[in-house]
Image (cartoon, rainbow over all chains, first blue to last red; front, side, top):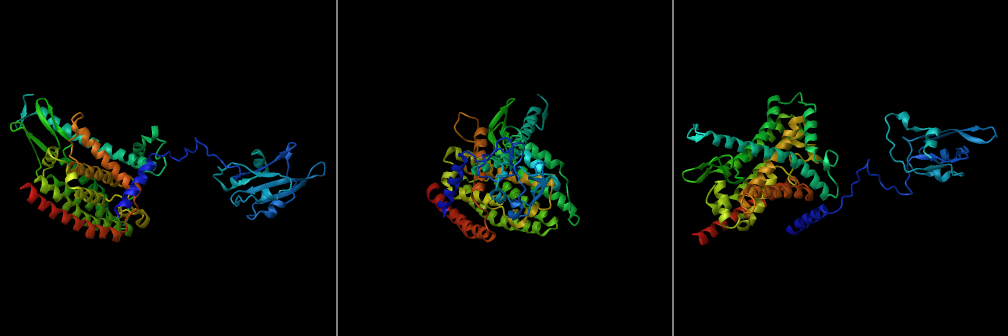
Length: 132
Length: 349
């Protein structure tokens, strides 16, 4: 009964001389994995969003957080007039990225998504483009 | 210098007051920085960093904590027993500090031709060249230690909350169970030193081996029982946050809450100081450094051990705690007393 108690003390003491694993967060940034799924971003090609408003991403989204409205440009091409993601609903599953046929959406490494109001969690097309 | 008060010069009284102040400030500072040390040490033992933001490596953390607690809103529950609720933190805090009065923390020093013993409640007889202290010092400490629990029980009862009451009651039961074993453990020390005076006990150890070597079982049991008596992990059942929210301090806020913590840490320092005095040779050590240094070093080492134990062991269950106290420690200490008695009879007489 006594030996396990001493063994426990030994273990905690040995930990004292190990390098702490703590990260001094705001000053030290974490190493983010390549496959990390953070905030979405809309990819840009020829100075405009690649999205062709095919509705595949809102269709596949299990959380129903993506709203797309299609528009028509001068060349009669379809484009996303409105593209919104409600981050309060998003579960970061990445299905939207997988479903996209034109590689218009990706997920960035940004994980600091705290905000003060509910409205601020709605990421519009403009805000998503900014994150490219 | 020639003015005498009760046959002693004014300088002597100044030295006495200075001694009390130094000891008090030292204990207060240690209390403040023990909270910091605890967070740091346990942090590192869990491969974390502990406080880092306030000052260099978080060194100003105790001051920040103090300021924060001081300015927090003070809440007294409407149904609480007001007077008892207000007085309880004081009842817990005062015995914790005054037990330090009888502990010798260094060799007597000479000031203006007068020798002053480094023990608050002590007197140096200039003619006989001898230190006189309270000759039942240990009894005084045990008495003060058992007074501390009044604060806890009072806090638990006055809060008018079931969690608090349960915490207070647990503390009372735990106190009785462990005070007995602790008291019996140090009886072996009195049997060897033939005195209850802490000064005499320290002097005895300087001449022979420290009592930790003569009475290892008593040392271990006394230290463990002391941890239980001051409600430290793994015996922190009165505040057991997973079961009782915060136990007897659930309803306390602001400085009154801080006072309970101060009492807990002051108790820890006192317990470590008493253990040092009774078992680790008090202020005696190799001659190349002053006595008070060795005393402080030993006390700090024991404080470190308390924190080390806290970082290692999980909390006892209540029935386990009672079983350990009554069925393991009490018989063991009784056996130890008998064995010591036989040993003293056979070898010392």
